[in-house]
Image 1: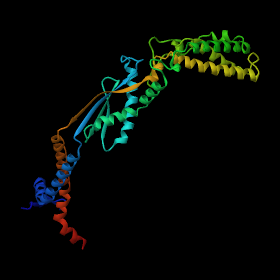
Image 2 (image 1 turned 135 degrees about the vertical axis):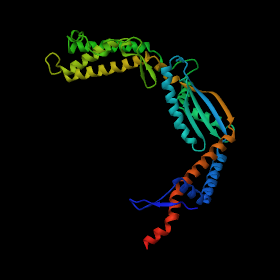
Image 3 (image 1 turned 60 degrees about the horizontal axis):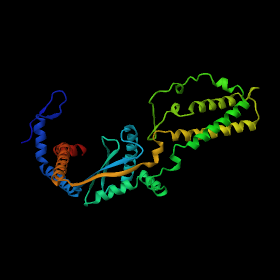
Amino acid sequence: MPAQLTETEDSGSELPDDALLWYAQALWAARWFGLCCVVLGLAAGAVAAWREPGLRTVALVRGENPAVGYMHRNYWDGVSRTIQSQLKVAAEAFRPAVDIAVKSEADPWLVRIELRHVTSGEGRRIIEQLTATLPCMARSASVTDTQPAGTVPTDRQPGVEREIQLIEAMDQLQRQLSVMWPEWDQVMQAPVQDSLTHPLPNRVFFNEGMLRLPFEDVPHAERFRRLTRAVGQVSLRSDTATATQSNESRRQLTGLQQQVTRLFLLHWAAHDVFSAAADSHSVVIDSVHEASEPPVRYWLKYLFAGGTVSLGVVFVLVVPWYWLRQNWNRITAAGD
């Protein structure tokens, strides 16, 4: 039975008495269209559920470093972020055939890898390929191949000889400064107003995944700073009578400063908390578990999604369709 219409006094337009009744009539008139949409939605959901991989593999990847304990959580936080980013980049080669997710764990030295695949054993094979492509794994293998077992590469030793070279270079730089600027030592005795003159106990720097030893805690740091400041003052005072020297002397002074700076940075790295172990990282597969997921869950999820989307399409499109059906003759007559 068609809805009763009334005419308003102000505008003269015809409106439905009951919007809900009108909408119900629209749905009933479009019942075959709605049924077809629902069937198509359920069919699409069934196809998606049938193509869903039925196996799920979860693996825990653990970072190892014999020189760094697991009590240094800040250090492992940085390493974990690096490993996760590298695994995500490597996982792009297996998509979209395999769904791979890389997640962090409560322990920062652990990284979780979740895979959804079809073939049994495929998850472990992909995880082994992912970990084999990590730069830290390749670097660890190269160190093992080139160094005898139980030894540490020479460039990562604390470097007593390097420290002796640093002291000799600073002595040479000091002698050159004394020749070019005899009173440099008295001028540099003035206190420096910066943060480095007030060491903070137990302070470390987090830089590029490594915990760095503070500058003020490095041996010979104060002397190195005074010498470099003095060289800078010589460059600024080069136009004065006391500091005017030949270009050859200034070039020699600059060369000595560069040599001292290079040796000090190497010396700092030798006393770094963890830089001596930066090349000894390795990533091992801690555990791998493969399980089949119940197919009922996927079928229910995709069938529900397909039915819901199709009903939403019906509820949205039925209003303009039914309105055009009722007013088509009027619209075409007005056009004529």
